[in-house]
Amino acid sequence: YVQADSPANTCEPMSIPDIMNAPSYMFEVHFGDGVVVLRNEAYDIERTIPVGDAYAKTNPNGMWGSARARIEGDALVVESKDYPASKWGLAAATQILGGGADVPSSPRKTVVERIATSADGLSLNYDYTVFDPAYMTKEHSARVVLRRAADDAQMTPYDCNKDSARQFSRAPGQSLLTPN
Image (cartoon, rainbow, N blue to C red; front, side, top):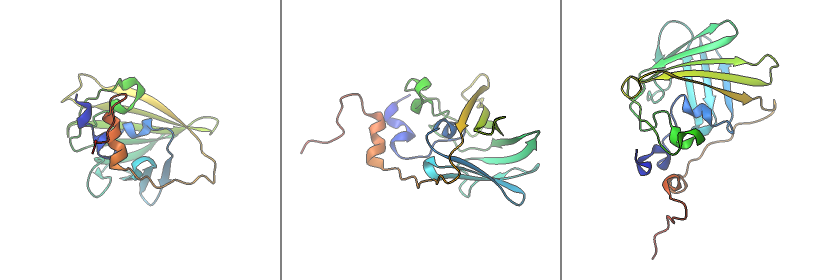
C-alpha cells in the first residue's frame, strides 16, 4: 500500500460500504415506485436500487455497482456486485482502525447491506458484509450506527477540493507547498 496513490488524494468518492463510516455526514433512504434511493451527503453519492429480484446499475456510470433490494422483516436488504476495480477497497486508510493502510477491491467484490431503524427510532443500524475473493480470504462484517438528524436538517453540497484532498498523504510536519 502506497498512501500517495490513495484515491483520497484525488477526490475519488469512497466505495460501498466504507462511505457509511463517515458518520458526521448525513444519509437518507427514500422509497419510490419500485425503487429505493440511498443518498450519502459525503461525495454526493446517490444509488437508485430496484426492489425485486433483478440487479441494475445503481448510477449511470456504475461506480457503485449493480444492486437489488428487498424488505426482510423490518429491514431493507441491499445486495450489490459488479463494482469497478478501485484502490479504495475497504477504504480502511481513511478510518481510525485502518492504521493508514488499505486493500484494493476487484470487480468480484460483493456487499450485502442491512438497514433498519433502532427500536427507539433514534438511530439507523447499518450492518454490512463485504467480500472480495481477489483480496480477502473471508467475509468482513460490521455495524455502523447513525444517529437520527433533526427533521429540518438539510444535506449540504459536498465539494472536494483536490489541493486539500492531497493533504491526506502528507506526512506529519511535511509541507505540500513548493518553495519558489
